[in-house]
Amino acid sequence: MALTAAASNAELQELAKRHLWLHFSRMGSYDDGAEVPIIVRGDGCYVWDQHGKRFLDGLSSLFCTNIGHGRAEVAQAGADQAKELGFFTNWSYAHPRAIELATKVAELAPGDLNRVFFTSGGSEAVESALKLARQYHKLRGNGTKYKVIARETAYHGTTMGCLMATGIAGLRAPFEPLPAGGCHVPNTNIYRLPEGHTTDELVEAIAHRIEFEDPSTVSAIILEPVQNAGGCFVPPEGYFQRVREIADFYDVVFISDEVICSWGRLGEWFGAQRYDYRPDIITTAKGITSAYSPMGAVIASDRIFEPFSHGTTSFAHGITFGGHPVSAAVALANIEVFERENLLEHVRTQEPAFRAMLDSLRDIPIVGDVRGAGFFQAIELVKDQETRESFSHEESETLLRGYLSAELFERGLICRADDRGDPVIQLSPPLIAGPEQFAEIESVLRPVLEEASRRMAVR
Image 1 (cartoon, rainbow, N blue to C red):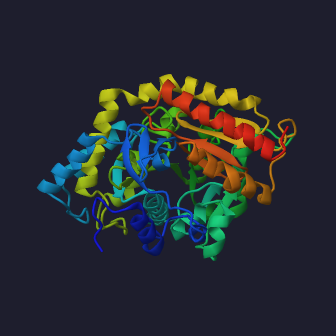
Image 2 (image 1 turned 45 degrees about the horizontal axis):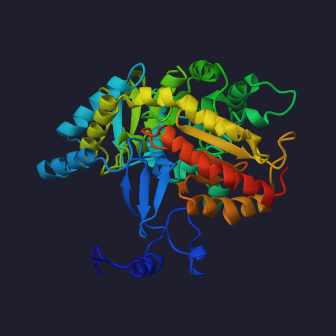
């Protein structure tokens, strides 16, 4: 059945509920007449639903639309490329846009990360990086290295290999047993650092875990510059510099998972630049095209590439649409917008105002912590500010899904109310946002959080 532009909302709702399987969604919740939210248009920091209602996109769709919605010139770059060459694979072939984009990415990436392997998205980028690390070690005669050190509550994607690294029990359990090798250490939730412990212990736990597992079995360490799941955990001072030392000492590949934290989200091209460290591999996606077309990438150092650079060796891995010419053209146009409008500097300039607005909410009893970096911030919700007592699973369900998520959306703000860890609200607006949008976010958050405090009897 082909839908016309004039298809009614009732038709769209019926067909969505009958045929469209939404990701990470409780499909049964639509059985009782609840509407599937249908977004039909976007412009700048805003999107509109099928009823014509406007929403502030406070999550950049899913940490994706960094340059904002409605950039016709970026879409046009993809259309122009499709006319010239709609598709050709990067399996033993190249095309101009993939070459140009790989060159540009290498120019912007830190250190000697000069080799770019394209994928279709973030999970594919992480999956590829984990495989690359294993084959890298095998080519160097270290075939027993297969384990991956990651952090608790961290999200690294949904493919089976990525789930090995992902540290969220609820995402892992439905698919166990997973591939062997996932090893987890504490994350950098300093707000909940146990009394008597120091932040130095958080990074030293990585070295201890490598020793426990036997260094000859550990392939990689994978960490986000700012950890998404759990609510924007930032690193303590010197954390990543020490990770670099640990990785070098134990001959372990250091992967910086920047599917979210790259392309200006933290005010730099890459999160590694914000925190001044040099990984062996960066994984990226989302903002590389500002989601105008699907794309991801693995950016590897010359050292990681070296064993693959001679003889008959190849990286025994590929993605059909990796380096797709239309996506590559869109990515190049996206980066042009960043440079022309100086978006990195805009984020750095506006970050203090964004953070100050969120910090101003600390007077609301349910607000326990505010944390993050750049345009990637979170509010942790608590039962008691003084003791930092969190909510039970049942209370979180009532708070987040029984009230907050629906109420924030009803008031015109798209953000994330999440409890992969303690309950948080995450905000990650397009990088073009400024004081007007910050004020609008506050005008929604304040009354909703005040009402949440009353509903949950938080005083």
